[in-house]
Length: 109
Image (cartoon, rainbow, N blue to C red):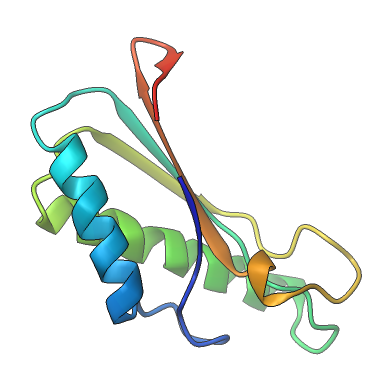
């Protein structure tokens, strides 16, 4: 599952749309084991430094992990932030969080 972070460009907070999608995912994952991998990304804008963008993307991923945990998801959750993965200015789609769920090494979602 990938979703463009509806979050404000420089804030890692989840908006109502993000929460609605995560609520749906939490319902699907509730009661399942496995591993949830959450990756945060940021948009290159040629203004903010790589350290700031890495921290921002990490906070996005952490907020998603925390939110899913509060909604009853009990799978192992790992998260990381990768900053901006391009060196040229990106689009709003680059501001995103990717979520992958694995059960016994088999990708299911």
